[in-house]
Image 1 (cartoon, rainbow, N blue to C red):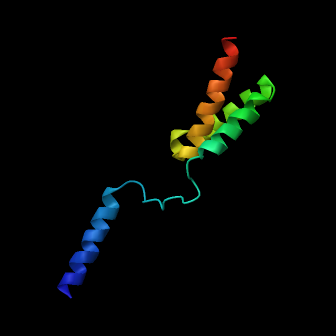
Image 2 (spheres, rainbow, N blue to C red):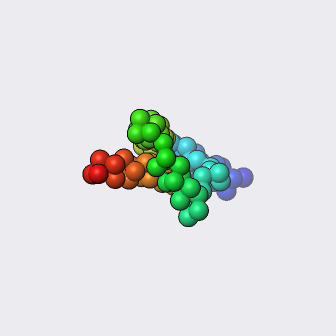
Image 3 (cartoon, rainbow, N blue to C red):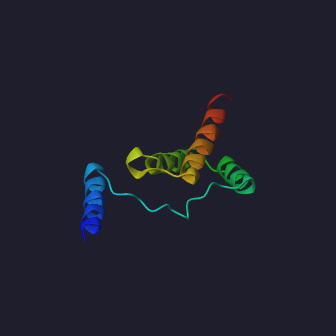
Length: 90
């Protein structure tokens, strides 16, 4: 009985010292494949500049640190940024 109280107390102490609860890993958040990334790049390059800016802003808000962005969200942000940057230098 003493052992079970110690284990429960240890678990409670570990839980209280962490300000945030543990998150379950998101299995839906996987990086884009090379073909998906190429398709995204191709689709964005055929859109109007204002549409790409809108996509970039949406991707930027998805990558807020509070949301803990995944690989896919970061890839979308970087791809849109590269398209906009390439257009600016032309």
